[in-house]
Length: 102
Image 1 (cartoon, rainbow, N blue to C red):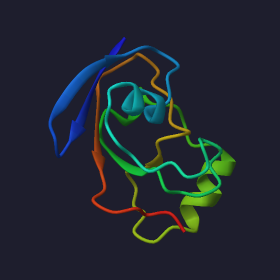
Image 2 (tube, rainbow, N blue to C red; image 1 turned 30 degrees about the vertical axis):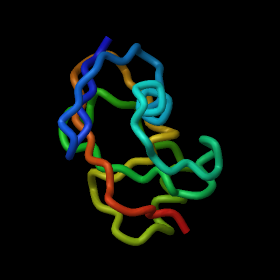
Image 3 (cartoon, helix red, strand yellow; image 1 turned 120 degrees about the vertical axis):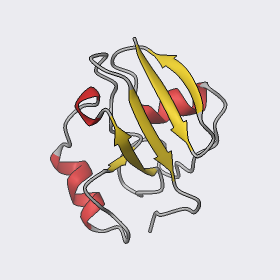
Image 4 (cartoon, helix red, strand yellow; image 1 turned 180 degrees about the horizontal axis):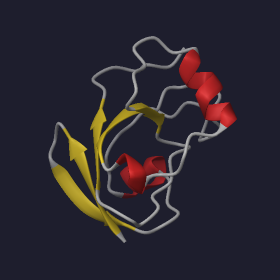
């Protein structure tokens, strides 16, 4: 289990290993856009991993290709539907204040 902290709310909760960030957020009642239901085809669940980046899965080709097509992407960018908690360290993410999908 890892502790996931969601900014800017500052809400923290435990997340089981193997859970996607999207599933963790929805399970905790935190609203996040997810137009393609977790298929990495829309980019609407774009978030920033602020701390604990080694605590989430590596970026796969499909996610990387979608991130390349999104405006405002940086080194901390991930798609919440693709990033899985590894259970190795606590993670802090930042939700964007707007839908970033295409």
